[in-house]
Image (cartoon, rainbow, N blue to C red):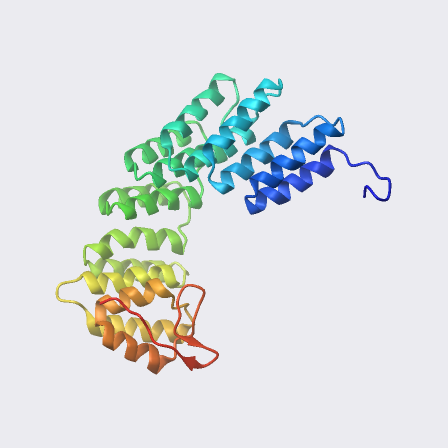
Length: 302
């Protein structure tokens, strides 16, 4: 463009910064915004927001805060997208306190929150394992008249699963359904995991039936929960685990490292290796057993 004597404008630089942000390349994003200034182009709200978003994708909360402050010093007021990017950076850093701080700052400036800003705060609380705060923010979101989608609910369900809170997980799931949000496979897998850790395979199987009855097919996430429930049951449900694996392979479900780890716990390391060899489970991005038809050893955890 420059060689053709076409002078770049703010939109040109925003596109470059956006590309760097998609990769989380903060240094490159910062380099382009500085070059803009040498061409006497003034960065606008979108420009600063894209740099903040690059910081968020890289998980650099402090750098994102510096750019938001630089933006304000330049007398450019952040909008809801800017604040949402900042809150997302806090979420990546698992820092709900700062996420709540910037959400409060946004309200102080008279900027109305939206689904993205609320979901970013909920995500920050969920990543930090603060289930109570995540649910409180979910309620605040609904009180503000903003409808949470299946992704937001699944984020809270996943947080409940990580701390093994089956009761709260069930409450959130019921709330989601009551609000007319159709659960997806990820929702069901997150709902099943606390029960799986408790060895309640009957409940996990019931959830599978409910899920498939609603037209959803099991994937590797739910398969992991199912095998984990068999492994955590006392006694272990070896036959059920083996049958589930065979059915999953036949259905073309990805058998990844996590699935094989749960299988190894359910049936034992040796039997897991035998099944992987017999079924020639192909290597996936996160497992490693058969590549191009050549069998490789399985490192299952008993």
